[in-house]
Length: 154
Image (tube, rainbow, N blue to C red):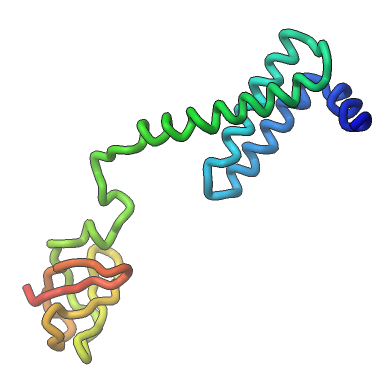
């Protein structure tokens, strides 16, 4: 325990800021928000060490733990309320946005499957009734299933 206390005692205030930057860098690499909360705890601890000095080393670790838990409890609620409702629920769902649009058959359908051009993109497609469609035919998108569009003759 003595080496740990000596290590914490030797960390200056900016050491907490370095830890916060390292945690934010890890957050950039990872696809979650889990590293933000310890980073916030490290920033607050660094500010406290800067303002209050270092009366004894153990309080830094305790402050870091307490502020990390507080940030982890409050942070997700704030983020959820900020980003919960979207005016455009299909914003990142290209296939769902395609429903109702007209497309052109690029590759003739065989067995009810082929390719269509919608805008500047070619999509795998299947006909809604299983019929074969000729290249150049106009179709309407009925729905999307993953990366495949379901179409019917227009």
